[in-house]
Length: 428
Image 1 (cartoon, rainbow, N blue to C red):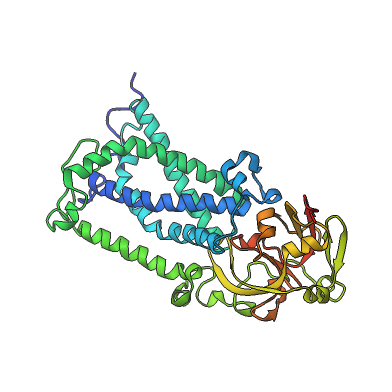
Image 2: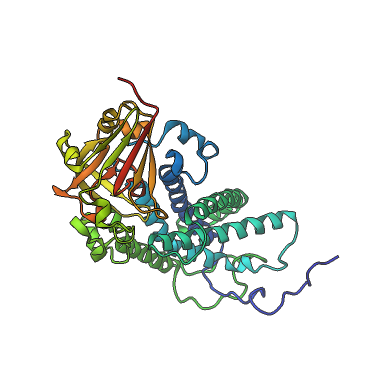
């Protein structure tokens, strides 16, 4: 019994509908290999950033960590090098955006296959179609949600972190299956024409690939208007331009002013004390009463200690040059001055604590807190910062006190700290 008529309906399923003389197995294979390298980099750095963002941070985890990335759970997220999260998330966001032209080019190169007729031929074809659906849908979902998140724009109603994380697993599984299914086709295409043959040879760069029924090559190609060299030149130019207008928010230096499309690049990098904030004191409903003279830092351990800001400043002060790095991909290197977290643990009788819960003074309903593990507490560079760049913290940067920990996402470097509860300590 035939499920579909032998002849396709009018439109994109007809063999003569797609007429570009450039499409073919070789072009698709080369675009796919290039895209595979970029997507692998985005995927690896994405999972690493997830581990830092909520993996080993105990109560920060939306997905319970005993079921999530167990190896990293056991190892803990490291504090060295201090720029680790800034690098992984900067690469993740920058490469993800730079890959967009290549994603579109790859989809353009295979679009006739998406309309192949009949839509389903056998079980193998069904598996290929399902992986294509998950692959194309997955990459479009990941790029769309990732880009709007990097722009601090949330038109959707679901939790971005959870959706982006599980979307990454669906996309990764589909990508692995698709590569496994297409590995033979890729090898044949590259063997037939060489890895760079149609680019090096000016004639081959404009000549259609051999026609195959139900393939990517048009049966009646249109006239050539651009060579394959030109296609790669356009792609390289588009990707390079996106890199220039995006990467400066992560790399800094002379690229920073050029990052005009980045959330925290160009003029958007300005902020109190020379670096930006995502969450201002006003947005957090921080009032002068909450952080004024009556403010106290409550340390809870074997005993409870309450300290004024003057008493904190009277403790031994340490300065560290550390980046503040955010999930949107931007980072800023600053000199922070304050009291070591390990010294605060000792002050309340919790030396050697295995965990500290850091809580902000933000009003109920917008309470922010973060859990830090023993490695993050014990690192001598981990501070309760009171000053930055030689000045008292600005209100938007967390005055009267904020946490700064090397290699930790900025979202977990709690601002406007009011209470620190140490557990698992008490050694002399």
